Image 1: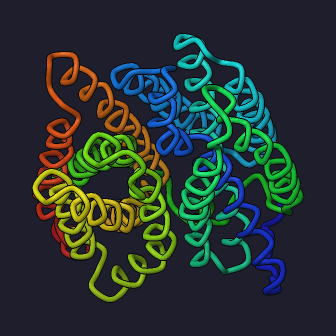
Image 2: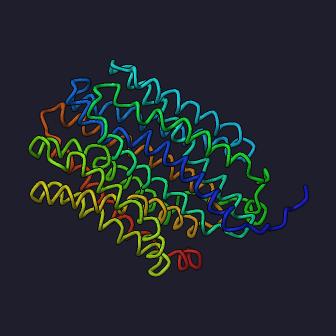
Image 3: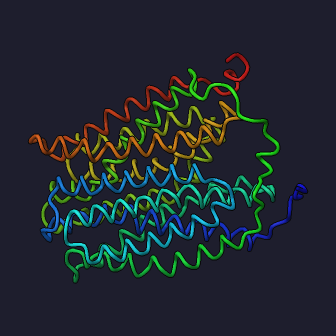
Length: 401
């Protein structure tokens, strides 16, 4: 087939495509996955769930995310994306609507699992389709801006949940359901109109992947990324609930902690991208883990108000940067195995973050508290920092590895 030549793209086109991608991530991550986090204290307060059941429901959602990411890795071509992406968004919309009627824990767990599958598919495929389109126009460096939708989604979820005081139980899902449908329809329609070929320039320009996927360099990166998945997910799942258990009723941090997370997340993509460009992705990743570790430590060692605010700001301001820097560092270590390495990292991250709420549930079931369960995240992030420091410099690894 003929090789498409790079095409010009106007600022308006670029903004429209990035906005569509960011909107999809806002929908599936903000109104899907992380809407549950600030909502959980209210569901407990309403008597629909207890703390252990809340952790179990979260685990089912993360299992769905892992399965969805694996589906997206298996069907990764552009023609696959054009079919699977709309289907995943339909599943997201239907399950979010059904959650408004799910008073039973088993039914809610099933719906959260299916919603997680849709989230995993969209979170992998939407940025991949946009990157393909941008690469053909020599604008691939702008692709990371899609992840601004994650921060926007967290901010929107915090605002919507705080406005559900007049609702109880399953009815609290209605704001997310009503917004998901029109936003999904508009954004998906924009992306499916993109003129991206089924074969990418990147795939033609790179030689076939060969060699081992796991070696001394990538093993350390895999280990650090698994630790990140386990370490960040506890604050990102239970921080508002922790605020509810530590503070007086009506304290602003029950809702406000998630708002702090959202506000810290929004500029974090640009921040860590800039730090990585100046210091190198390896050193930037180590700094990222250190800041994130200090945030998790603050929640369990400092007075509640100060600790919760610092945890929300430092973890919220780093977790997207961890993803960005790790993916880029992996490609720098093994330039000809980028797609394989990225797929493996996504799957491992999903598996590790699924383990976090499950471990918290087991700990609480054995008589432990939610406060002490946060030490699981602290230890995981300490491991992540250690393994990140063991990742070799990409330039020296390629020269001598």
